[in-house]
Image 1 (tube, one colour):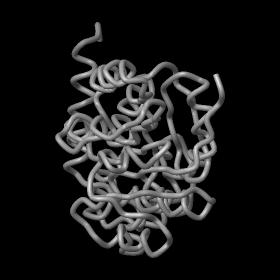
Image 2: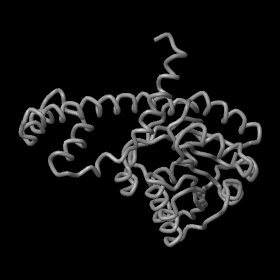
Image 3: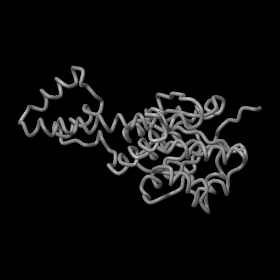
Length: 260
């Protein structure tokens, strides 16, 4: 079949991560369609940079070659796809949807099967890192889906990512993402406790940082969180506790169906 070239990208979920993703897609030469959710500010900024704003997910789907979802989790993904003004209402045959959300792998596989019947492709492309990397165009992406589809959307993914790891079939990337977040959140919890204990013990934070970051306990999460006591700077860890709780719940749900 002819390899489609993506020219216009729809973005649903222009929040902390979505803004940087959208900005990089626009700056690197693709047309961008956006839809507002709660927060106007990032949408207004992207419109200023040349994005087109639509009212609903179905309109975005009708006017885009590819749609990127950057919403909270599976309930929001399902609503965006199946809802009354959802993607399914407006999608043309051949549309590719890439889900950057942290989602339930079983839900991802079900949505992909439903959409395949309408000749629409759904792949999972969850991300690692923070809004800082999103703005810089340096997110890490796990991708799940057919290799030829991944190749078709790779030029778009490259605009906001500097690491793309193909994890397997659709759903595999969301599995890897949940394991990644389980570890990241565990590292963050341990680092936060260590920092708290060190503060209560009156330990010098520079010393603590140099010892931890120079040995086997080194972690990227500790490196981010130590900036809070060192420089009163929490910009390295912009992630909501409620999202962490959701990710851990998804992880636990996934493992409950396994012999572990």
